[in-house]
Length: 124
Image 1 (cartoon, rainbow, N blue to C red):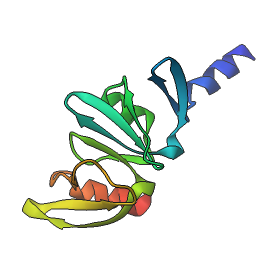
Image 2 (cartoon, helix red, strand yellow):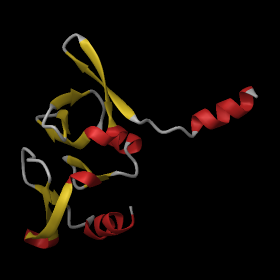
Image 3 (cartoon, rainbow, N blue to C red):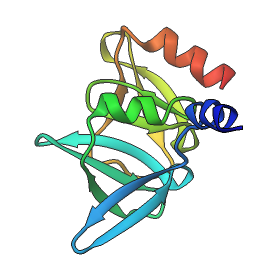
């Protein structure tokens, strides 16, 4: 029975991320997160309601946690699919994204990831 429990618990994916904000520890559901972005070497989490928290994880670590519903558009952004309103052609074969919330900077998809992004947007 213990072996079965151990096997099942290995396959579990996180459904939330813990954020340390002042003197509180807040559990934020992945469904509430619109995007993660890097600004001045700090990784920020922006929620759909506009709340912003600093996160103590790397972008690579966040990619592993947020596998199916998030996409790493470039070095600075990891975007929730629900936050994407539309995409349009941009300079140098990139795509620019219009989001359902206002990001701090223009969000673009690297030209090297455009085909992967379009496939992800279609099938996930």
